[in-house]
Image (cartoon, rainbow, N blue to C red; front, side, top):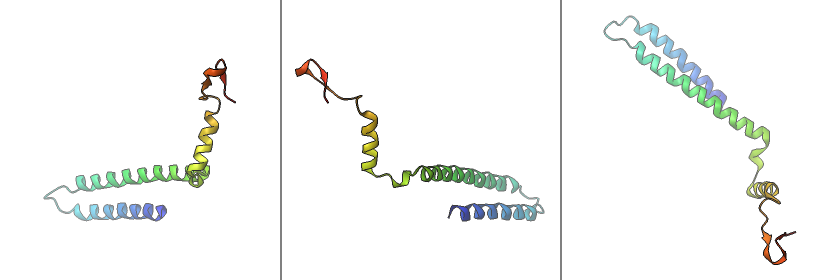
Length: 97
């Protein structure tokens, strides 16, 4: 579930903090840059997931999940009624009823 995935990402970030504290003792290289890149990537993933879930939840609240092609066609036909009706050249271009 999305909530579990968010919790996993939080746990990964916590683990990275622990690793950062551990590697602070090694002075031959600076792994903080790598860890910061990983952290930024995880934050980006979390933000993207939140946006996707907002869109999905919004769609469910609108009932979009239950729309089928027939419903979509009826909605579009209702919006187009009277706008795209061709005129009849055989009766002085009166609208077709």
